Length: 219
Image (cartoon, rainbow, N blue to C red; front, side, top):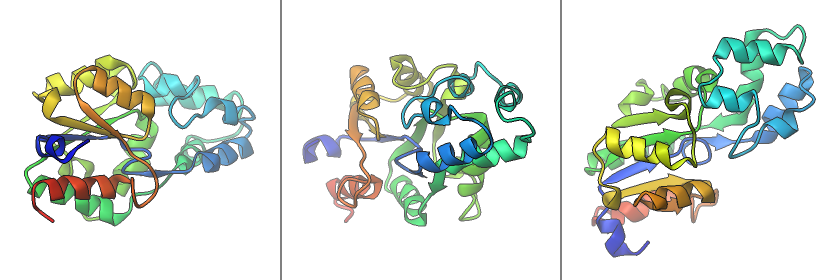
């Protein structure tokens, strides 16, 4: 995106995993395998899950049903053990990213979450991580759209249309930040701008946010 396009951005939509939250898929695979889930490597993807993880992420499977399905392959594993193993996928939210979210709102941007996530992670690790500064996830965003609550997940164009419609966003003034090329293409397909976020200091969330602030003469 050029500087002129950045200047026209009013709304920023953040993916969580891989953008705000650092991920380590291999940690989760190892932890679940240790509990007995030998198919963990095939079931867990960086951008898309297989059943029953996909069912949990799209809201077709409740957390209780999910734990019961996993226990068929992980005898003796408790809900807490399964939650802890699954949450190994999530590593950390650097405090600098939380500070940046607050700074963007102070600069006049409206900011949102659009995430493929599930109630197990969302109500445990994610909720706790966003309390690092004493608040909650709702203190950082103007709105949150989670796949498990919408019964569909990215890259389905419908979920991008949902966030725009629900919060009255003009797609042409909205930027989606995501770590998946497919999700970025889908966002662009409904008229949004989209940038793929990387994991290096030159293309990570903070680097892109600094560009946005500079486009408004705030750095």
